[in-house]
Image (spheres, one colour):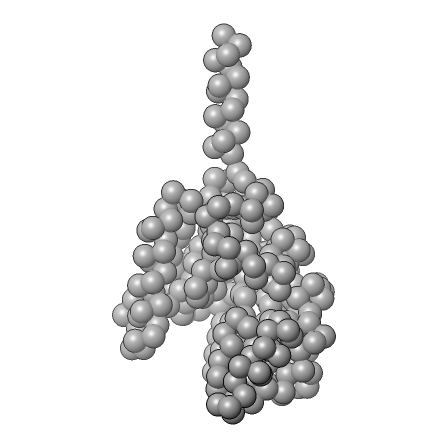
Amino acid sequence: MKKFTLCIGLTLVSLGAQSLEDVLKSDHRSDKNKARDVYRNPLETLNFFGIKNTMTVVELNPGGGWYQEILAPYLKNKGQYVTATYDADSDSEYRRNSYKAEMKRLKDNKKVYGEPLVVRLSGDVYGEKESADMVLSFRNYHNWIGKSEFEKLRAIYNTLKPGGVFGVTDHRSDTTEDKKGYTCEPCLIRDAEAIGFRYVGASQINANPRDTKDYPGGVWNLPPTLSERGLDKKSIKKMQKKYKQIGESDRYTLKFVKP
């Protein structure tokens, strides 16, 4: 009887939710992605936002899935991971291909990710109104500037429950200008407050004082992209060596709450 009880206990533990630390160390993450932890600081970032494994969390445009492979397993057993992604029928070939790649990734990792909910990254709400405890955006805001930033912020606000958290990181400009991938931190705070959010505060965990923000090809000259855009062909290797020493971009990490 004791052995049977012990077996049941061990089974329940194995089926239980993983801690963030366990997910970050897990073998399902590639060495390449783990190597970026030093720049993206996922444990500290998510703890700053106040994530819990019982939450319903919406991630906006997961892209290549770097954070998705952390969030989906973490929320698998007790919470709900929601991906707000591009439309399958988008006019953009890039967006259609991105959607297909993400759907394949979710299918291939079903055992690890569980059953993520997929909603459209469009419209005035991501999924159901007031359904999420947290909405997260990692390096997306620079793509919205001058196009749809207020539309996106309103949709985020509508998606969150009262008391829900909006956490955002992006490349930080040193001026009020949004250019070359870098965005104005105080401008984002102002715009979010105008929508109705309460600004809670900022963390400097993703700051990088080595980032000079003056690259010919913008932030994309830095890792992980290491774009050759704007670089002299004769000095590409030299410049990329320099950019690797700088590391990934200087980023703000901001937390807002829906009252």
